[in-house]
Image 1 (spheres, helix red, strand yellow):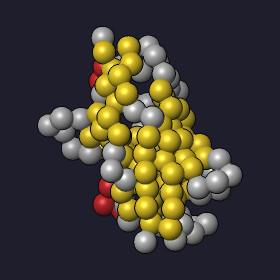
Image 2 (tube, helix red, strand yellow):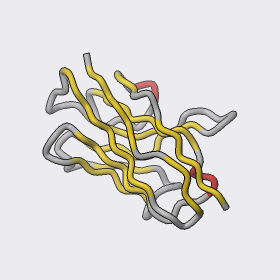
Image 3 (cartoon, rainbow, N blue to C red):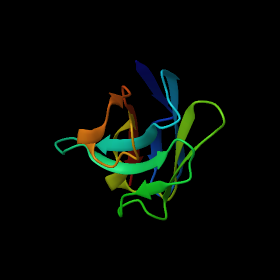
Image 4 (tube, one colour):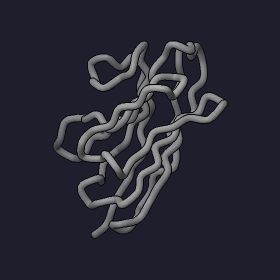
Length: 121
């Protein structure tokens, strides 16, 4: 079993920055991929960014390219650095784990509980 806990969400003005963290515990294998998804009110959950466990491969959605960066540290923590935030980035952000670089919600094995990000205009 894998347990994912997100933190770092909050309220920020447009143009500002936030860094989300995802602490992973349990049976995290070196082959696992980690990712971030988000869900805005009334919308489907969508892919944001992903990486393999070593960080040698990353993917990101077109809507966040150049603004959001996924990374990890030497412990079991994955980050999402979000810069130049826009009101349309407002959503609940979810950490995800899968046995590959995860870019679709159907391939996710484990989800975190989510953290709210609100960007005011």
